[in-house]
Image (tube, rainbow, N blue to C red; front, side, top):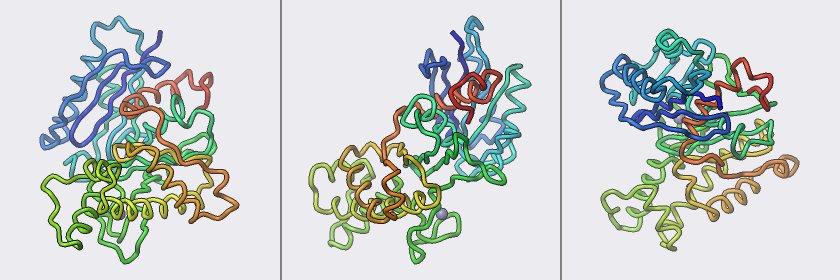
Length: 319
Ligand SMILES: [Zn+2]
C-alpha cells in the first residue's frame, strides 16, 4: 500500500495524517497552530508533525501534500497572501522548506482547493468535471473545478467566492467590498444576523449565541431562527445563482460546519437558488453536501500527491 502525508494548516489548528490511496487515514493527530509565534514557529510545528506521521519510516510514502489557509501560489508552494489569523505567514516558502527537510516531493495549495481534490477523488465530485466547492465556516472559502482542473487565476487567488457581494449597500467587508456573502452565511455572519433579529424584536441575544445554536433553534421551530435562516439562505442562494451563471457547473458542493444544517437547509437553498437562476442553466446543477466529511482538508492535501505526482497519468483525473 502506498501512502502520502497530508497536512491541513489553519489559523487555530494543524491536522496531520498518513493517508492511503483510497483516502483512508492510517494515523495522524491535531495540534494547536499557536500562530502568534509567527511563520518560523508554525513551520517548526509543521516539520515536527510530519516527522511524527512518518514515524519509523516503514510505510511507503510517496510525497507530502499540504493545504493551508491563505492564498497559495501552487507552482512555487509559497504563501502569496495570508490574513492576520496567521501573522507573518505571507511569503513563507512551504514547499521548499518541506522538500529540503524530507527529500520527498511536496504539493502545497489553498486549503479549500485541497478539499476540492478530496471531493474529486473520494466525495461528491467523483463523477464530475465541472463543479464548485463552498466551505462555510469562520469565513466562506471556494474552489472551482473546470474541465477537471482547478481554476487558479493569475496569482493563485481564484475561487475566493466568500467575497462575492450579494448586497452593494451591505456592511463593509474586510476585503474592501460591501455585502460579501461571507458576512451573511459564515458562522460569525449567522451569529450577527441572529443578534440583529433579536434586537429588532427587543430581545437581547444570549451570551455565546453562535451559528450552531441558531441552526439548532431553527430545527426546533424557533420563530427568530426562521427569520435569520431566511436571510442566510437568500444571501447564499444569491451567491450560488451568480456562481451557476458564471461557471455553469454540474454541482455546487457545500461543506464546512454551517452545512451540517441538514436536509431542510439544502432543500430551501436549492429552491431559492433555482428561483434566481436562468431556466437554461438551473437544470444542469445540483446543490449537494460535501461527501468527504470533517477530514476533507487533510485527506485532500494528501491526495494531491497522487493527482499531481508521477502517477498522475494513471489516476482518474489530473486536476
Ligand atoms: Zn469581502
